[in-house]
Length: 261
Image: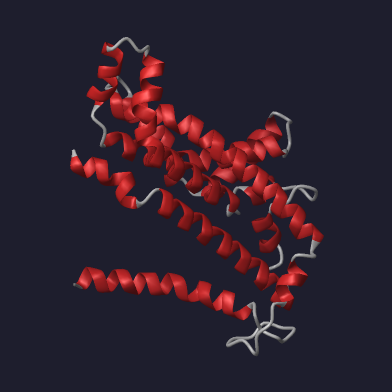
């Protein structure tokens, strides 16, 4: 009972600030106030006409898509190796890939900036994607590994015994069963990349600014309703993605196999 109350209290603490931001975006006044005065969609229309923010959105979208694909492609074989095989240095490999979850992302951002400057490649879209892949791959590995943990390896061995080559056996017997983990890992990598500030802010240039960084750069200025509307759209965007994943891949579908084993 106590745990349930604490859980609900934490959910409320997380949702109330987000709800306040969304509610404020509908104010009819030209400045931010809470509770909002009146109701209008004017600021959303104005937000959609901010060309620099649209350019940043397209950049963030492209980087997040590429990051999600790379993180999933890299995370899948790592998860398979960590779950299915026992080898020397396994714990070290696991610690290496999980280290971005332990290190502050500010430290990672500074290290990447110094590394890129040392090898003289500067800040490019590719270097920004690499930074995002570093911090998102652990999520993909964990979610894919969770799907693999609940599977019986005998299924894939049976496919091999029937004459299927190893890769074909994995593709036909195992891959469809871990699809929930793959989808969840890709979406979480996408969201983490799209919303990232601490890596992007070190690697951004005046001509390459992601949407979260552009918003962050305006926090020391007066809060305008159109800026709050942009933040509300990001919140809506994230909620829709999570809802799609939850509908297509429920938590029970992701971890249920592990519990049934």
